[in-house]
Length: 117
Image (cartoon, rainbow, N blue to C red; front, side, top):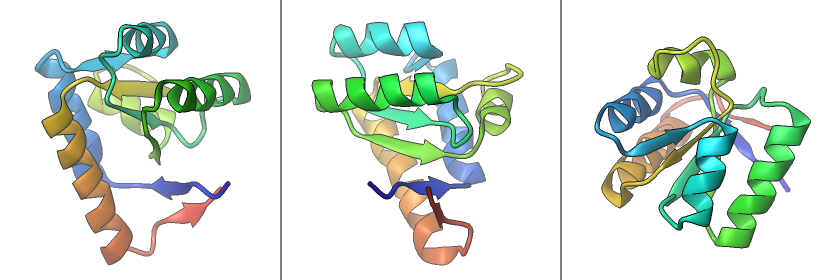
């Protein structure tokens, strides 16, 4: 599978706003809970997330029918969320998830920063 790594400040900032509004689950355990409770609508995974976290989150997203996007790195996601590093975030608001995805799509069309994993 080819996954695009999106480096997009606007999308990452929107994830920070989602957290402030109570519309994000941050970290492996919180994301796992959001998926099991069927609250997660989209996952964002750091490109440099460890194999264990990455593999588990990709499998859970497929199992629950929740799409995921690789976005930035752990430091960038963490910075937007007031933490040192964050490997995975689940967005629980459909409108915010759509806005973040639109921001990543704009980045993909307008930037040469995408790279396949």
